[in-house]
Length: 473
Image (cartoon, rainbow, N blue to C red; front, side, top):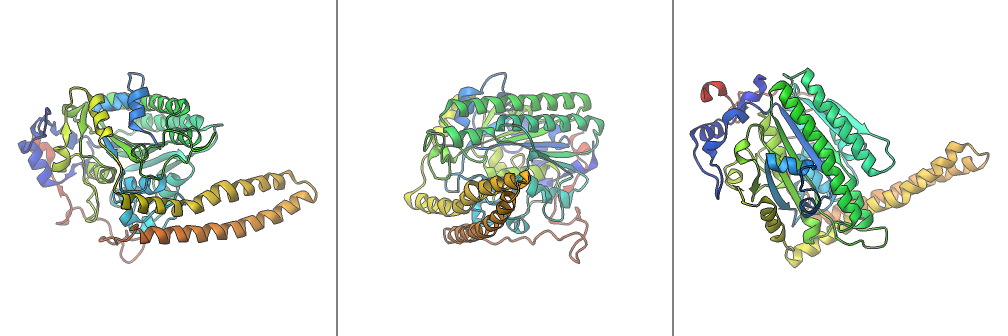
């Protein structure tokens, strides 16, 4: 077992070993939790599936052929909500990957900007800064996550940017193949700790085109469930070969409107209806069989980054909005063992409604303002630019030269329009409460800077290095 996994919070270990506290409801108390998980967090896999309503998983993919069901049977599931926050992809993925809500990170648009992740570093950067020996990987179509993996002074070790595929289902299949290959490759180096992020996109895209209540959306959920089953099978194979257990988290950023806005098009999400703000967290902690099949009433999207950092013994930021799901007393006490998990999750989904009218208006305005630049870039400037590029590539006498001139105009004028609308959207976001809270922790120092130093894990404000074998032996 790698020594780097022995850095744990002394109070948390003592409480778990002593069996203090209990988990409410018909469930196993903390004393029933095996201490093996304290030594088993060598491999952490975070699976993101965009825009996936949990109720559709329960309706279409709660069966033995689905990785959703396999993961739910293995771990703890929470029906969560982003009510009171933007139900948009980049804002919520930023929340998931930084551990803070939008009133801190300030991301209000799907247009990528690197600046917020300097003030609020992603889980990728935090792992690479504190534990560079962990092998980190991002598997995703080229875009937001490959960008996040590459920025800052501490990029991930392996950025697997997927290109190709004639539709989103094929892209997700390629992501799945690359993820499975990377998981199986860990068997060749069982003593190297790993963190992987793998992203599935087809459900969200089906929702945007056909609506969250469509058969196409349902098929996307089924397809992703099958992809997850392949990934879970690979994890089981790696566990059997090495004896190590994997911690696995699956999450979605938001839900979807049930009906399309127009034929062949749906606005999809961004407002505050319960279907749009619906989300979920599935958490399988390495070695925690005692709570397999459980339901959490307390998990949230902001808990995911703290949970991953805790698994590797990395210190928490002082200004996280979330907490580690495996050690935080309130989150541990939120786990129940329902007689019928599907019914328990359905009841939880149905308990969420709308925010107050003021919050709903404020967030609707923020989403509309923040989305303008993205719409102009992706539905006007981008397609025109791509069409002109095809004319340029054909090298047609006269026409290609005109297309090249037109492309310059489109990029210059269109880019300026996108920049102005994006800045306006961010200004409106700030006026409605996004990014108004400054970080308490300093940015990560860049390698080679005067402030840079190797992290000291024996500092008083960091987790204690414990001989866990002695504690549990």
